[in-house]
Image (cartoon, rainbow, N blue to C red; front, side):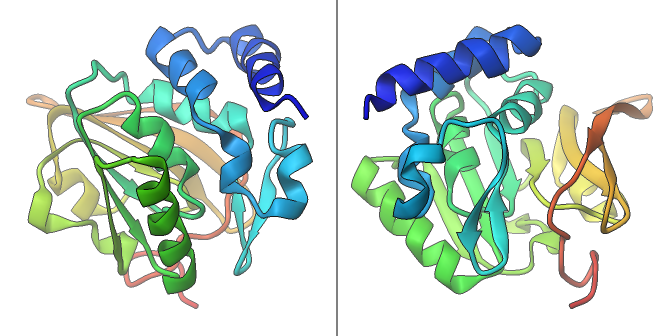
Length: 213
Protein backbone atom coordinates (compact mmCIF):
# COMPACT_ATOMS: atom_id res chain seq x y z
CA UNK A 1 0.00 0.00 0.00
CA UNK A 2 1.44 3.36 -1.07
CA UNK A 3 0.74 5.55 1.95
CA UNK A 4 2.46 8.56 0.40
CA UNK A 5 0.11 8.45 -2.57
CA UNK A 6 -2.89 8.02 -0.28
CA UNK A 7 -1.74 10.94 1.85
CA UNK A 8 -1.32 13.26 -1.13
CA UNK A 9 -4.71 12.19 -2.46
CA UNK A 10 -6.24 12.95 0.95
CA UNK A 11 -4.76 16.44 0.91
CA UNK A 12 -6.06 17.26 -2.56
CA UNK A 13 -9.50 15.65 -2.36
CA UNK A 14 -10.45 16.19 1.28
CA UNK A 15 -8.61 19.37 2.24
CA UNK A 16 -7.80 21.61 -0.74
CA UNK A 17 -11.14 20.94 -2.43
CA UNK A 18 -12.97 22.01 0.75
CA UNK A 19 -11.20 25.28 1.38
CA UNK A 20 -8.09 24.40 3.36
CA UNK A 21 -5.63 26.84 1.82
CA UNK A 22 -2.94 27.50 4.45
CA UNK A 23 0.21 26.09 2.87
CA UNK A 24 1.79 25.37 6.26
CA UNK A 25 -1.20 23.22 7.19
CA UNK A 26 -1.19 21.39 3.85
CA UNK A 27 2.54 20.68 4.06
CA UNK A 28 2.10 19.26 7.56
CA UNK A 29 -0.63 16.93 6.33
CA UNK A 30 1.57 15.74 3.49
CA UNK A 31 4.38 15.01 5.94
CA UNK A 32 2.68 13.37 8.95
CA UNK A 33 2.00 9.66 8.47
CA UNK A 34 -1.56 9.35 9.72
CA UNK A 35 -1.61 5.55 9.42
CA UNK A 36 0.90 5.38 12.28
CA UNK A 37 -1.58 7.11 14.59
CA UNK A 38 -4.37 4.54 14.24
CA UNK A 39 -4.50 0.89 15.38
CA UNK A 40 -2.84 -1.47 12.86
CA UNK A 41 -6.17 -2.97 11.79
CA UNK A 42 -7.21 0.48 10.50
CA UNK A 43 -4.01 1.31 8.59
CA UNK A 44 -5.76 0.83 5.27
CA UNK A 45 -8.51 3.30 6.27
CA UNK A 46 -6.23 5.95 7.75
CA UNK A 47 -6.57 8.43 4.87
CA UNK A 48 -10.32 8.13 4.42
CA UNK A 49 -12.73 10.98 5.14
CA UNK A 50 -14.08 9.90 8.53
CA UNK A 51 -13.07 9.42 12.18
CA UNK A 52 -11.57 6.12 13.34
CA UNK A 53 -11.55 4.40 16.76
CA UNK A 54 -8.24 4.50 18.65
CA UNK A 55 -9.29 2.54 21.75
CA UNK A 56 -10.53 3.53 25.21
CA UNK A 57 -13.76 4.82 23.69
CA UNK A 58 -11.93 7.61 21.83
CA UNK A 59 -11.51 8.48 18.15
CA UNK A 60 -9.10 10.20 15.79
CA UNK A 61 -10.98 13.00 14.01
CA UNK A 62 -11.52 13.01 10.25
CA UNK A 63 -8.61 14.66 8.41
CA UNK A 64 -10.69 17.63 7.26
CA UNK A 65 -11.76 18.55 10.79
CA UNK A 66 -8.16 18.36 12.04
CA UNK A 67 -7.06 20.59 9.16
CA UNK A 68 -9.92 23.05 9.66
CA UNK A 69 -9.22 23.44 13.38
CA UNK A 70 -5.50 23.88 12.71
CA UNK A 71 -6.14 26.50 10.03
CA UNK A 72 -8.49 28.34 12.39
CA UNK A 73 -5.56 28.95 14.78
CA UNK A 74 -4.08 31.25 12.10
CA UNK A 75 -0.52 30.07 12.79
CA UNK A 76 2.62 31.91 11.76
CA UNK A 77 5.11 29.21 12.70
CA UNK A 78 6.76 30.38 15.93
CA UNK A 79 3.91 29.76 18.36
CA UNK A 80 3.49 27.82 21.58
CA UNK A 81 0.19 25.92 21.38
CA UNK A 82 -1.81 24.01 23.99
CA UNK A 83 -3.85 21.02 22.85
CA UNK A 84 -6.59 19.58 25.04
CA UNK A 85 -7.06 15.88 24.32
CA UNK A 86 -3.98 14.16 22.89
CA UNK A 87 -5.77 10.99 21.80
CA UNK A 88 -3.50 9.09 19.42
CA UNK A 89 -1.29 12.15 18.98
CA UNK A 90 -2.14 12.99 15.36
CA UNK A 91 -3.31 16.58 15.94
CA UNK A 92 -0.24 17.29 18.07
CA UNK A 93 1.99 15.82 15.36
CA UNK A 94 0.40 18.09 12.74
CA UNK A 95 0.89 21.13 14.98
CA UNK A 96 4.49 20.15 15.71
CA UNK A 97 5.34 20.48 12.01
CA UNK A 98 4.11 24.07 12.03
CA UNK A 99 4.79 25.69 15.43
CA UNK A 100 7.70 25.97 17.85
CA UNK A 101 6.25 24.08 20.85
CA UNK A 102 3.16 21.94 21.45
CA UNK A 103 1.87 21.16 24.94
CA UNK A 104 -0.77 18.43 25.02
CA UNK A 105 -2.93 17.03 27.85
CA UNK A 106 -4.58 13.59 27.82
CA UNK A 107 -6.77 12.29 30.65
CA UNK A 108 -6.44 8.59 29.73
CA UNK A 109 -3.01 7.27 30.79
CA UNK A 110 -2.89 4.40 28.26
CA UNK A 111 -3.50 6.72 25.30
CA UNK A 112 -0.93 9.19 26.64
CA UNK A 113 1.68 6.43 26.96
CA UNK A 114 1.08 5.20 23.41
CA UNK A 115 1.23 8.72 22.00
CA UNK A 116 4.41 9.57 23.89
CA UNK A 117 6.16 6.44 22.64
CA UNK A 118 5.17 7.33 19.10
CA UNK A 119 6.39 10.93 19.45
CA UNK A 120 9.77 9.65 20.63
CA UNK A 121 10.03 7.06 17.86
CA UNK A 122 9.15 9.57 15.15
CA UNK A 123 11.30 12.36 16.56
CA UNK A 124 8.57 14.86 17.47
CA UNK A 125 10.78 16.46 20.08
CA UNK A 126 8.80 19.69 20.38
CA UNK A 127 5.66 17.93 21.70
CA UNK A 128 5.31 17.92 25.50
CA UNK A 129 2.70 15.61 26.97
CA UNK A 130 1.14 15.10 30.37
CA UNK A 131 -1.73 13.11 31.86
CA UNK A 132 -4.31 15.27 33.59
CA UNK A 133 -7.63 17.09 33.54
CA UNK A 134 -7.60 19.03 30.29
CA UNK A 135 -10.49 21.25 31.37
CA UNK A 136 -8.05 23.00 33.74
CA UNK A 137 -5.50 23.77 31.03
CA UNK A 138 -1.77 23.71 31.71
CA UNK A 139 -1.00 26.85 33.68
CA UNK A 140 2.68 26.08 34.15
CA UNK A 141 3.51 26.98 30.54
CA UNK A 142 0.89 29.71 29.96
CA UNK A 143 0.27 32.04 28.29
CA UNK A 144 -0.15 30.28 24.94
CA UNK A 145 -0.37 31.60 21.40
CA UNK A 146 -3.42 29.42 20.90
CA UNK A 147 -5.44 26.59 22.42
CA UNK A 148 -7.11 23.80 20.47
CA UNK A 149 -9.69 21.58 22.18
CA UNK A 150 -10.33 18.21 20.53
CA UNK A 151 -13.37 17.18 22.58
CA UNK A 152 -16.88 18.55 22.96
CA UNK A 153 -17.29 21.14 25.70
CA UNK A 154 -20.53 22.35 27.30
CA UNK A 155 -19.07 25.86 27.55
CA UNK A 156 -16.05 28.05 26.85
CA UNK A 157 -13.90 27.63 29.93
CA UNK A 158 -12.67 30.78 31.66
CA UNK A 159 -9.39 28.96 32.32
CA UNK A 160 -8.65 28.69 28.59
CA UNK A 161 -9.28 32.38 28.05
CA UNK A 162 -6.94 33.22 30.92
CA UNK A 163 -4.21 30.98 29.49
CA UNK A 164 -4.01 32.55 26.00
CA UNK A 165 -2.21 35.72 25.04
CA UNK A 166 -3.93 38.81 23.75
CA UNK A 167 -4.30 38.30 20.00
CA UNK A 168 -4.42 34.50 20.36
CA UNK A 169 -7.25 32.15 19.45
CA UNK A 170 -9.14 29.36 21.18
CA UNK A 171 -10.63 26.72 18.85
CA UNK A 172 -13.25 24.62 20.60
CA UNK A 173 -16.32 22.47 19.77
CA UNK A 174 -19.10 23.59 22.12
CA UNK A 175 -22.65 22.42 22.57
CA UNK A 176 -24.33 19.28 23.81
CA UNK A 177 -22.87 15.79 24.14
CA UNK A 178 -24.48 14.82 20.85
CA UNK A 179 -23.97 17.90 18.67
CA UNK A 180 -21.63 20.88 18.74
CA UNK A 181 -20.60 23.98 16.84
CA UNK A 182 -16.92 24.53 16.12
CA UNK A 183 -16.19 27.94 17.63
CA UNK A 184 -13.19 30.24 17.27
CA UNK A 185 -12.74 32.74 20.07
CA UNK A 186 -10.16 35.51 19.67
CA UNK A 187 -8.87 37.40 22.69
CA UNK A 188 -8.24 41.09 21.94
CA UNK A 189 -7.54 44.15 24.04
CA UNK A 190 -11.10 45.30 23.36
CA UNK A 191 -12.70 42.02 24.45
CA UNK A 192 -13.50 38.50 23.30
CA UNK A 193 -14.80 37.82 19.80
CA UNK A 194 -16.40 34.50 18.88
CA UNK A 195 -17.15 33.07 15.44
CA UNK A 196 -19.13 29.90 14.72
CA UNK A 197 -17.49 27.91 11.94
CA UNK A 198 -19.57 24.76 11.37
CA UNK A 199 -21.45 21.96 13.04
CA UNK A 200 -19.42 19.02 14.33
CA UNK A 201 -19.51 15.96 16.58
CA UNK A 202 -16.74 15.12 19.06
CA UNK A 203 -16.38 12.81 22.04
CA UNK A 204 -17.23 14.67 25.29
CA UNK A 205 -14.66 16.74 27.19
CA UNK A 206 -14.66 15.16 30.63
CA UNK A 207 -13.30 16.87 33.72
CA UNK A 208 -13.94 19.37 36.48
CA UNK A 209 -14.93 22.16 34.08
CA UNK A 210 -16.44 19.90 31.40
CA UNK A 211 -18.87 17.00 31.33
CA UNK A 212 -18.95 14.72 34.37
CA UNK A 213 -18.06 11.05 34.02
